Length: 448
Image (tube, rainbow, N blue to C red; front, top):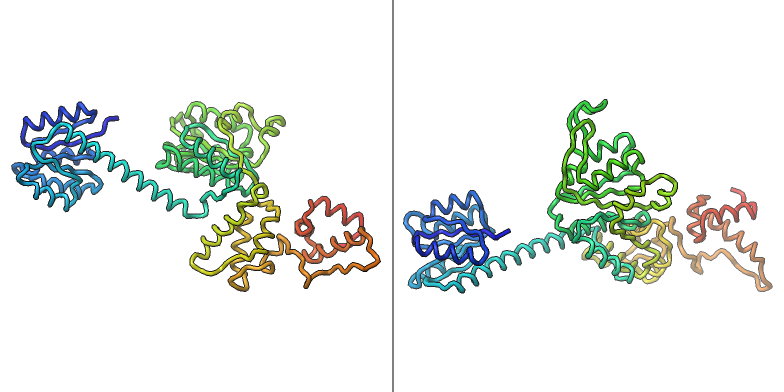
């Protein structure tokens, strides 16, 4: 679409020549013969650039400048003045004019000044968007990671964000699937539109159709008024369907149609057209669900136009110090609080079944319960275990040797004692699966 310019000049001949030159350069030009008419056009169309003569009968260009900037301070105004009154144009720039053209000016001077004005406007918009993005990224939704797998993931997100393709994000619970979805939204042309998240697992099955597509008053018991669904709310933006694997099978054909045709019917209503990009996420194996009949194959391939898999935290342990520093700064900025090397080393070795979400929770707990500004091993939550030290070592092996089975039994008993009999915590403490612990308890007839 051609960029719009408002040209105000009482000199008919000069106005027509300038209008022609601007049109030849590809701009859409609105023209006015005096300041009053020009201001009226500005209020109606609000073009991004105004070119106005200074000396005009009635409302002067100087007054037009002030009125325009009062309506929209972001508007760029170029003042046209005679060579003898350049000082007046300089005064206008002090008030807020972008630039000036001294008569007589050439076609090239006009084109260059206007092109620079639009270039400046674009740079200003990009700078504003960048500041907004930086502000948004300052929260806990920033993507943190310098490991190879995370750099590959970020490159993929950057490429996919600019497209309109549906994306299926997979990964274990707590890996940050919604964070990636928001990054895809921010990097797209839809970034100024809404980002609407829906947790499909958190909505009762008999309400999820209404939640997604809306309903009309009286369409079912309890529908006391019309209600817009998430698809309508996401129009022009992005709809994020988390835990998509939990979507009831009988509702999947309606979602497929909405994806294919950008069209759906509210419960009890008539068809609606929307413009929505869908990003879905799951921690389930959808290919396995397809084989068992729990997920439609055609819906899967419509959602997974571009698949993105987020690695678990245990596969990018080198990112843990970065994450620790990020969570620390987010909660204790400007303080001397830090993690000891022993704590960082221990946390890097822990398996993190809850991934980044669990790590953030552990950091928050340690910061609340810490005994000093240096977070030590003793500050680790009991649920993730604490490494044995010489001061709390309970096994004392004799010189003549010791039975491995007896040693293993004592280790299991000690773990259960420390975890107050909680088998799941004891299994984490011993760094073994829970079923392995249960087998050892039964093998050694350990009483509970």
